[in-house]
Length: 453
Figure 1 (cartoon, rainbow, N blue to C red):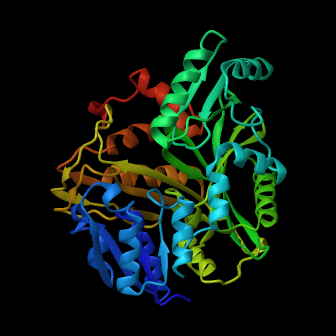
Figure 2 (tube, rainbow, N blue to C red; figure 1 turned 120 degrees about the vertical axis):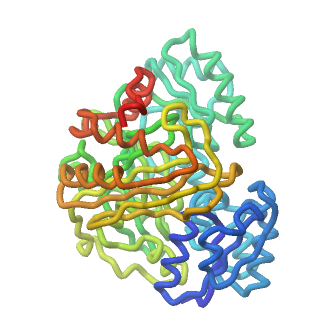
């Protein structure tokens, strides 16, 4: 086991990693920008190193500075969290070259799954069902037209090198295709430095289902159930839950077993998430995230497995001690991402938190690194924290979530708490009757009225 790890991230995920390391008896090093000098994980770590000014490119994305921090402090391993350098294969290789462990998968797996076209090819070869689409990147407009005609409209044009909704455009007809193709390429080039795009059949009312897996690189891999992440705005997840209201036991076991077997064949190590669109009883692979996910706590709540703890042990060379038959699923869990944004316009709302009171009680967890007096900087993601509830049934979880939302107080800035107080009272949400387009339609039709909450 490692004696000391460096946490190459910030905010709630840095604090989450720090807690897991401490419970394993591992010393921690926090790195931070000048904007995060007063961050909670910096205060609680055994050591801290400032790695640069506020812009992420000069600090949290500054590989030489992070490497220097490892060498100065003697850190044996780096946990990248999510975002920033978590899916940067070159970063993992550089650490390895300096005999520092990367707490994540091997660089070749990161690189392969980071290319969406190659990821689909790999998924097919591993027996994972995929969305019908082009065999690879489409280079010419004529090729795109031919592929689109074969798939049938509408089609989705997606950046091969990225995600998060950037470089993604919908074409509902042949007439819309050229402009959508050009726009997607431009966005892909701007966001990822690569204008390669591919085409997929557009599903009209799918749900977003993802499967959590753990592998040790020694031929052992298990799944820890699915998460339903269908409530999204601009392709960004807002609300996640497990188990999915849309699946039955046979369906969740089938897709879980497919993913676990695929990762055994792949030789995958660390935590990972295989993401699908689900419609009419069928699953269609869209991508794999080779890191811990923002929404991992709901899986922890229903399985009792500490995913970050497992990541660290796997990176230290320990084989998985968990077998598939050891994983027991208990109850239902829901997570709400509370952001520093206006609840209806979603404009960022950085600033100082004047009063902070998180909810508590049985089955309530808040993953957050903020506190009263903390100033949320404008330089990074707007996440204030994650509210997670767990109960025996989905209905009990919804009631617990409603109570917890009413207790949650964050003053001094705008937050999206009123959005969730509205959603929890909506009949479609209560019934689990939503798809990936539901939230944007709800917002576009004036469903969000903060005067009501």
